[in-house]
Amino acid sequence: MSAADPGPAASPESAAPHPGGVRLLADIGVTHARFALESAPLQLEQSATLNCRDYDSLLAVVTAYLDGIQGARPRHAVIAIANPVQGDDVRMTNRDWHFSIEATRRALGLDMLLVVNDFTAMAMSLPRLGRADRLRIGTGSDPQPGVIGLIGPGSGLGVSGLIPAADHWVTLGSEGGHVSFAPGNPRELTILQHAWTLFGHVSTERLLSGPGLELIWQVLAGQAAPAAAPKAADIVAQALAGQALAVDVVDTFCGMLGSAAADLALTLGASGGIYIGGGLVPQLGKRLAQSPFRERFEDKGRFSAYVRQIPTYLVLSQDLSLKGVSAILDQQLRLLRGDAVLLDRIRGALPGMSPAGKRVAQLLLAQPHGFVQDPIATIARNAGVSQPTVIRFCRALGFPGLLDFKRKLASGLSSSIPLQHSQVKASDRMPDLSAKVLDNTASAILRLRDTVDAQAVGQAIRLLRAADRIEIFGADGAGIVGLDGQDKFLRLGIPAATYPSARLEQAAARALTAQAVVVAISEMGDQTDLLAAVSIARDCAAPVIAITRADSPLAQSADVCLAVDSVANDTAQLSMVPRILQLLMLDVMAVGVDMAARRPKPAPHPG
Image (cartoon, rainbow, N blue to C red; front, side, top):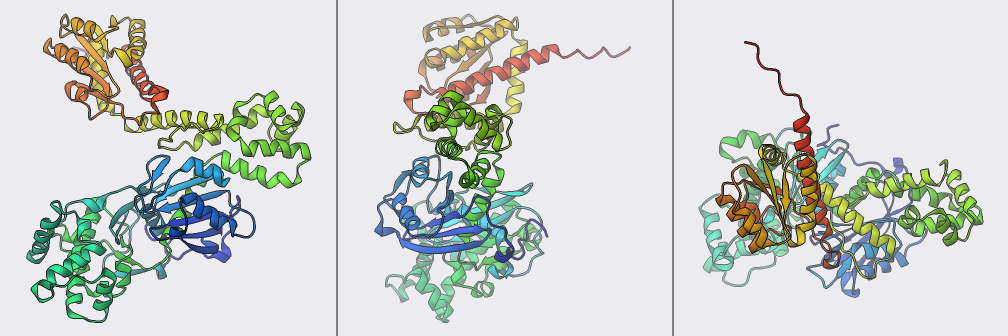
């Protein structure tokens, strides 16, 4: 079976139970919060729906559900919310709920809590859909292994995609619903012109959504029906009942949707197919197949033959979000190599342990980061046991001693580094504070590794190799970084200098020649004095290498920019993450210069 064709859903009867026990799945919408426990893949139990209006926070509504369940409480949970999720601090736009993911995890007693955007969850559900969960619209070839696209009109317009990567899927975070709407015929131009009078910029979401359907109704009704438009659900119901105006409105809407879906297919190269979800179109059911949707999907001029091969599906399943969050949590746990698996193993062995062993296990489960960091004497004292008991605990789990056990646990903790910034708070305990600071630094380094411009690095190294002198500008905040760079290049035998003030940097810049190179370092890249020094250096024909934000004035003024974009830590931490990234870029350049000098020169061509 191809990666793009999910085929039949897994049978709950044949699914093995989750090794870590039940998992909590949740979908928090504008009005309702849906919960379920998953004991095995796609095997949901104790489902419940709570009214969000009855609770004053996300923690309160989740706690209310957990207080009502029977059996063991889950250790792993994932929540989909109708809101962007960027970092640890989440402020919901459709409800007055504001929370920290990490604080919520601790309050609920979870080993892992993931909070994701609901449309991302919908996208991740697609590979798990069975054939009964989707309706094919039109023709097209069978789906091929490759990218899958998802577009879903509802209260807004969600757009996402799935990219196959080895044995898992990667979701595309997207705000594709906000691209500009493009009319496909004169009637749609008339609708667009009306929308311009209301909004100025008209995104596709303005028309391909519930409110958009109502707007289309108003335009097509014209003077014959000046009353306020019915609600989107009523328009759909009237169309299904055969009411002429509603049918016209829905057909116009579906034609627009076909064009937008084809645009998405072309943009992604979606050989795995395009899926139509959201809260609005599935209500149409087979009526979508009778609409102009597929005809407009295939109407792409020179690329009509290309999109004609791409299948389109209407999603019929009503529990996309829960299937999606199940896939997300399962994938995350599978990617871990240590802490969650090891902690589950310890938790499972807990009932059979001796009283002293239980005390060690309970300390470890409560404070895994502290367990890794503390010496054996501290661990023994905090657990109320002897040091030999700690060693026996590790050996009972199959490790030669405490050091090997810590290495295994630490490898798991490091493998779960989130590629996002977690806000450090005054209320954080020391292990959590340490983990957040170090995880933020590690994730920033990984982002830099994945986004560094290798061509720019190579150009910078060539400039430095050709220079007879290197001037490092970055007084004030980047002064310490500059001193480190000066030391690196002096050790390589290249004259280098840095200066304690912007005034001296400007004076030094006036003495430069084209044989010198300036390395300008700044977190924000907008200091007036530094920009003035760089301008003087450029006037003297000295090339400038900038280590700064890609969108900064300094980046625009430099010959080469080595972009260092990071989420700065709290100001009390003195923006250490950007400074560490700046030091690393200096390391990259210095090592590059050194290695280039060590390469043997090519032998002269004979004759």
